[in-house]
Amino acid sequence: MSFSGKKVLVTGGSRGIGRAVVEGFARQGAKVAFVYHSNEEAAQDVITSLAGEGFETVTAHKCDVSKQDEVDALVEKLVEEWDGLDILVNNAGIVKDGLLATMDGNAWHSVLSTNLHSVYYFCHAVTRPMMSQRSGRVINMSSVAAEFPNQGQANYAASKGGIQGLTRCMATELGRRGITVNAVAPGFIETDMTVAVRNAAESEIKKSIPLRRLGRPEDIADAVMFLAGDNASYITGQIITVDGGLTLGGI
Ligand code: NAP
Image (cartoon, rainbow, N blue to C red; front, side):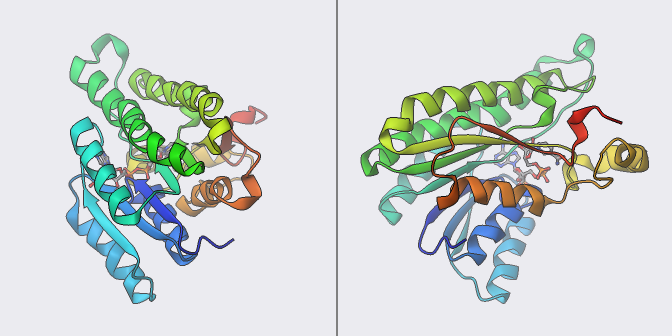
Protein backbone atom coordinates (compact mmCIF):
# COMPACT_ATOMS: atom_id res chain seq x y z
CA MET A 1 0.00 0.00 0.00
CA SER A 2 1.65 3.25 -1.07
CA PHE A 3 0.50 6.71 -0.10
CA SER A 4 3.29 8.41 -1.97
CA GLY A 5 2.67 12.17 -2.14
CA LYS A 6 -0.73 11.93 -0.42
CA LYS A 7 -1.54 14.78 1.96
CA VAL A 8 -2.74 13.46 5.30
CA LEU A 9 -3.99 15.26 8.42
CA VAL A 10 -4.21 13.26 11.67
CA THR A 11 -5.58 14.64 14.95
CA GLY A 12 -4.09 13.40 18.21
CA GLY A 13 -1.06 12.12 16.33
CA SER A 14 1.52 12.53 19.06
CA ARG A 15 0.70 9.46 21.13
CA GLY A 16 -1.03 6.07 21.07
CA ILE A 17 -3.20 5.16 18.11
CA GLY A 18 -2.70 8.50 16.36
CA ARG A 19 1.06 8.15 16.50
CA ALA A 20 0.84 4.70 14.87
CA VAL A 21 -1.37 6.21 12.15
CA VAL A 22 1.14 9.03 11.53
CA GLU A 23 4.02 6.55 11.38
CA GLY A 24 2.11 4.22 9.07
CA PHE A 25 1.31 6.93 6.52
CA ALA A 26 4.78 8.51 6.73
CA ARG A 27 6.48 5.16 6.09
CA GLN A 28 4.31 4.75 2.98
CA GLY A 29 5.48 8.05 1.51
CA ALA A 30 2.69 10.42 2.59
CA LYS A 31 3.10 14.01 3.70
CA VAL A 32 1.63 14.03 7.19
CA ALA A 33 0.55 16.92 9.40
CA PHE A 34 -0.53 15.91 12.86
CA VAL A 35 -2.24 17.75 15.67
CA TYR A 36 -1.39 17.58 19.35
CA HIS A 37 -2.70 19.58 22.30
CA SER A 38 -0.21 20.03 25.13
CA ASN A 39 2.50 17.37 25.16
CA GLU A 40 5.23 19.03 23.05
CA GLU A 41 7.80 16.43 24.01
CA ALA A 42 5.69 13.54 22.69
CA ALA A 43 5.00 15.45 19.47
CA GLN A 44 8.69 16.18 18.95
CA ASP A 45 9.55 12.54 19.61
CA VAL A 46 7.35 11.45 16.68
CA ILE A 47 9.17 13.85 14.34
CA THR A 48 12.63 12.91 15.61
CA SER A 49 12.11 9.18 15.48
CA LEU A 50 10.63 9.26 11.96
CA ALA A 51 13.44 11.54 10.80
CA GLY A 52 15.87 8.95 12.22
CA GLU A 53 14.26 6.38 9.90
CA GLY A 54 14.66 8.78 6.98
CA PHE A 55 11.07 10.07 6.84
CA GLU A 56 11.08 13.85 6.96
CA THR A 57 7.67 14.74 5.57
CA VAL A 58 5.91 15.00 8.92
CA THR A 59 4.96 18.20 10.77
CA ALA A 60 3.42 18.72 14.21
CA HIS A 61 0.77 21.39 14.90
CA LYS A 62 -0.38 22.55 18.30
CA CYS A 63 -4.15 23.00 18.12
CA ASP A 64 -7.00 22.42 20.52
CA VAL A 65 -9.43 20.32 18.48
CA SER A 66 -12.32 21.48 20.66
CA LYS A 67 -11.90 25.09 19.43
CA GLN A 68 -13.42 25.74 16.02
CA ASP A 69 -11.38 28.88 15.33
CA GLU A 70 -8.11 26.99 15.89
CA VAL A 71 -9.27 24.11 13.68
CA ASP A 72 -10.38 26.43 10.87
CA ALA A 73 -7.08 28.33 10.94
CA LEU A 74 -5.02 25.13 10.80
CA VAL A 75 -7.00 23.52 7.99
CA GLU A 76 -6.97 26.73 5.94
CA LYS A 77 -3.19 27.02 6.32
CA LEU A 78 -2.53 23.39 5.39
CA VAL A 79 -4.88 23.33 2.42
CA GLU A 80 -3.26 26.47 1.04
CA GLU A 81 0.27 25.20 1.62
CA TRP A 82 -0.47 21.75 0.18
CA ASP A 83 -2.99 22.87 -2.43
CA GLY A 84 -5.55 20.34 -1.14
CA LEU A 85 -5.94 17.54 1.35
CA ASP A 86 -6.43 13.85 0.55
CA ILE A 87 -7.01 12.13 3.88
CA LEU A 88 -8.37 13.32 7.24
CA VAL A 89 -8.13 11.09 10.31
CA ASN A 90 -10.15 12.41 13.27
CA ASN A 91 -8.49 10.53 16.10
CA ALA A 92 -7.98 12.91 19.05
CA GLY A 93 -9.96 11.89 22.09
CA ILE A 94 -10.11 11.93 25.87
CA VAL A 95 -11.94 10.13 28.68
CA LYS A 96 -13.35 11.61 31.89
CA ASP A 97 -15.17 8.66 33.41
CA GLY A 98 -17.69 8.82 36.22
CA LEU A 99 -21.20 7.67 36.97
CA LEU A 100 -23.82 9.93 35.44
CA ALA A 101 -25.36 10.72 38.81
CA THR A 102 -22.16 12.45 39.86
CA MET A 103 -20.81 13.52 36.47
CA ASP A 104 -20.37 17.29 36.45
CA GLY A 105 -20.92 19.54 33.48
CA ASN A 106 -17.22 19.91 32.81
CA ALA A 107 -16.71 16.15 32.40
CA TRP A 108 -19.69 15.98 30.05
CA HIS A 109 -18.91 19.05 27.93
CA SER A 110 -15.15 18.57 27.66
CA VAL A 111 -15.51 14.98 26.42
CA LEU A 112 -18.25 15.89 23.97
CA SER A 113 -16.26 18.92 22.72
CA THR A 114 -12.96 17.09 22.33
CA ASN A 115 -14.29 13.82 20.92
CA LEU A 116 -17.37 14.80 18.91
CA HIS A 117 -17.58 18.54 18.24
CA SER A 118 -14.00 18.41 17.01
CA VAL A 119 -15.00 15.88 14.34
CA TYR A 120 -17.67 18.26 13.10
CA TYR A 121 -15.14 21.14 13.08
CA PHE A 122 -12.55 19.25 11.03
CA CYS A 123 -15.11 17.67 8.70
CA HIS A 124 -16.76 21.03 8.12
CA ALA A 125 -13.39 22.63 7.38
CA VAL A 126 -12.19 19.98 4.90
CA THR A 127 -15.48 19.39 3.09
CA ARG A 128 -15.20 22.30 0.63
CA PRO A 129 -11.62 21.62 -0.45
CA MET A 130 -12.35 17.90 -0.81
CA MET A 131 -15.57 18.59 -2.73
CA SER A 132 -13.79 20.88 -5.17
CA GLN A 133 -11.06 18.32 -5.81
CA ARG A 134 -13.83 15.66 -6.08
CA SER A 135 -11.94 13.21 -3.91
CA GLY A 136 -11.12 12.61 -0.27
CA ARG A 137 -11.09 10.10 2.54
CA VAL A 138 -12.32 10.80 6.06
CA ILE A 139 -11.75 8.26 8.82
CA ASN A 140 -13.20 8.95 12.27
CA MET A 141 -12.14 7.21 15.47
CA SER A 142 -15.14 5.79 17.28
CA SER A 143 -15.05 3.03 19.91
CA VAL A 144 -16.82 -0.20 20.77
CA ALA A 145 -18.12 1.86 23.73
CA ALA A 146 -20.60 3.49 21.33
CA GLU A 147 -22.58 0.24 21.28
CA PHE A 148 -21.27 -1.60 24.33
CA PRO A 149 -20.56 1.08 26.94
CA ASN A 150 -19.07 0.34 30.33
CA GLN A 151 -20.55 1.96 33.42
CA GLY A 152 -19.15 5.44 33.98
CA GLN A 153 -18.78 6.27 30.29
CA ALA A 154 -22.02 8.10 29.48
CA ASN A 155 -20.10 11.10 28.13
CA TYR A 156 -17.60 8.97 26.18
CA ALA A 157 -20.24 6.56 24.79
CA ALA A 158 -22.40 9.49 23.70
CA SER A 159 -19.45 11.12 21.93
CA LYS A 160 -18.53 7.91 20.10
CA GLY A 161 -22.16 7.14 19.20
CA GLY A 162 -22.42 10.66 17.82
CA ILE A 163 -19.36 10.04 15.67
CA GLN A 164 -21.02 6.98 14.15
CA GLY A 165 -24.17 8.90 13.20
CA LEU A 166 -22.11 11.77 11.81
CA THR A 167 -20.01 9.33 9.80
CA ARG A 168 -23.01 7.64 8.19
CA CYS A 169 -24.75 10.92 7.39
CA MET A 170 -21.64 12.51 5.89
CA ALA A 171 -21.15 9.43 3.72
CA THR A 172 -24.61 9.91 2.21
CA GLU A 173 -23.96 13.60 1.56
CA LEU A 174 -20.47 13.33 0.09
CA GLY A 175 -20.46 10.09 -1.90
CA ARG A 176 -21.42 11.78 -5.13
CA ARG A 177 -18.42 14.09 -4.73
CA GLY A 178 -16.01 11.14 -4.63
CA ILE A 179 -15.45 11.36 -0.87
CA THR A 180 -15.72 8.32 1.41
CA VAL A 181 -16.38 8.65 5.15
CA ASN A 182 -15.88 5.72 7.51
CA ALA A 183 -15.11 5.07 11.16
CA VAL A 184 -13.02 2.59 13.09
CA ALA A 185 -14.27 1.28 16.44
CA PRO A 186 -11.33 -0.04 18.47
CA GLY A 187 -11.71 -2.37 21.43
CA PHE A 188 -9.09 -2.42 24.18
CA ILE A 189 -5.84 -0.91 22.90
CA GLU A 190 -2.52 -0.54 24.73
CA THR A 191 -2.16 3.24 25.01
CA ASP A 192 -1.90 5.86 27.75
CA MET A 193 -5.69 6.11 27.73
CA THR A 194 -6.09 2.58 29.09
CA VAL A 195 -3.17 2.47 31.54
CA ALA A 196 -5.29 2.71 34.69
CA VAL A 197 -7.74 0.00 33.65
CA ARG A 198 -4.93 -2.24 32.43
CA ASN A 199 -3.08 -1.87 35.71
CA ALA A 200 -6.22 -2.86 37.57
CA ALA A 201 -7.45 -5.77 35.43
CA GLU A 202 -5.29 -6.65 32.42
CA SER A 203 -5.44 -10.41 32.78
CA GLU A 204 -9.23 -10.37 33.29
CA ILE A 205 -9.64 -8.20 30.20
CA LYS A 206 -7.52 -10.57 28.11
CA LYS A 207 -9.74 -13.48 29.12
CA SER A 208 -12.73 -11.64 27.68
CA ILE A 209 -11.06 -11.21 24.28
CA PRO A 210 -11.24 -14.24 21.94
CA LEU A 211 -7.80 -13.42 20.47
CA ARG A 212 -6.46 -13.31 24.06
CA ARG A 213 -4.45 -10.12 23.73
CA LEU A 214 -5.04 -6.41 23.92
CA GLY A 215 -4.91 -4.48 20.68
CA ARG A 216 -1.80 -2.59 19.63
CA PRO A 217 -1.98 0.91 18.16
CA GLU A 218 -0.70 -0.58 14.89
CA ASP A 219 -3.76 -2.89 14.69
CA ILE A 220 -5.93 0.22 14.49
CA ALA A 221 -3.56 2.09 12.17
CA ASP A 222 -3.75 -0.84 9.73
CA ALA A 223 -7.55 -0.51 9.56
CA VAL A 224 -7.32 3.27 9.09
CA MET A 225 -4.81 2.87 6.27
CA PHE A 226 -6.95 0.20 4.61
CA LEU A 227 -9.93 2.59 4.62
CA ALA A 228 -7.74 5.37 3.22
CA GLY A 229 -6.26 3.22 0.47
CA ASP A 230 -7.28 2.26 -3.07
CA ASN A 231 -8.60 -1.14 -1.95
CA ALA A 232 -11.37 0.56 0.04
CA SER A 233 -12.63 2.85 -2.72
CA TYR A 234 -16.15 1.32 -2.65
CA ILE A 235 -16.57 1.36 1.13
CA THR A 236 -18.35 4.30 2.73
CA GLY A 237 -20.53 4.98 5.75
CA GLN A 238 -19.19 1.93 7.60
CA ILE A 239 -18.01 1.40 11.14
CA ILE A 240 -15.19 -1.17 11.19
CA THR A 241 -14.76 -2.84 14.59
CA VAL A 242 -11.20 -3.83 15.46
CA ASP A 243 -11.39 -5.49 18.88
CA GLY A 244 -9.97 -9.02 18.74
CA GLY A 245 -13.54 -10.30 19.07
CA LEU A 246 -14.20 -8.51 22.40
CA THR A 247 -17.76 -7.54 21.52
CA LEU A 248 -18.82 -10.95 20.17
CA GLY A 249 -19.92 -11.91 23.65
CA GLY A 250 -18.93 -15.53 23.12
CA ILE A 251 -16.78 -16.01 26.20
P1 NAP B 1 -4.04 8.74 23.91
O1 NAP B 1 -2.91 7.78 23.89
O2 NAP B 1 -4.53 9.28 25.20
O3 NAP B 1 -3.66 9.97 22.93
C1 NAP B 1 -4.58 11.01 22.75
C2 NAP B 1 -4.08 11.97 21.68
O4 NAP B 1 -5.11 12.97 21.47
C3 NAP B 1 -2.82 12.71 22.06
O5 NAP B 1 -2.05 12.92 20.89
C4 NAP B 1 -3.34 14.04 22.60
O6 NAP B 1 -2.41 15.12 22.49
C5 NAP B 1 -4.53 14.26 21.65
N1 NAP B 1 -5.52 15.18 22.20
C6 NAP B 1 -6.28 15.03 23.31
N2 NAP B 1 -7.06 16.12 23.49
C7 NAP B 1 -6.78 16.98 22.49
C8 NAP B 1 -7.23 18.28 22.14
N3 NAP B 1 -8.14 18.94 22.87
N4 NAP B 1 -6.71 18.87 21.03
C9 NAP B 1 -5.77 18.22 20.28
N5 NAP B 1 -5.31 16.99 20.55
C10 NAP B 1 -5.80 16.38 21.66
O7 NAP B 1 -5.34 8.12 23.20
P2 NAP B 1 -5.51 6.78 22.33
O8 NAP B 1 -5.78 5.68 23.25
O9 NAP B 1 -4.44 6.68 21.32
O10 NAP B 1 -6.91 7.10 21.62
C11 NAP B 1 -6.98 7.68 20.34
C12 NAP B 1 -8.43 7.62 19.89
O11 NAP B 1 -8.88 6.27 19.87
C13 NAP B 1 -9.40 8.38 20.80
O12 NAP B 1 -10.40 9.00 20.03
C14 NAP B 1 -10.00 7.28 21.65
O13 NAP B 1 -11.27 7.62 22.15
C15 NAP B 1 -10.07 6.15 20.64
N6 NAP B 1 -10.14 4.83 21.26
C16 NAP B 1 -9.12 4.38 22.05
C17 NAP B 1 -9.23 3.12 22.62
C18 NAP B 1 -8.15 2.54 23.49
O14 NAP B 1 -8.35 1.42 24.02
N7 NAP B 1 -7.02 3.19 23.67
C19 NAP B 1 -10.37 2.33 22.39
C20 NAP B 1 -11.38 2.84 21.59
C21 NAP B 1 -11.25 4.09 21.02
P3 NAP B 1 -1.63 15.67 23.82
O15 NAP B 1 -0.84 14.52 24.35
O16 NAP B 1 -0.81 16.82 23.34
O17 NAP B 1 -2.74 16.08 24.78
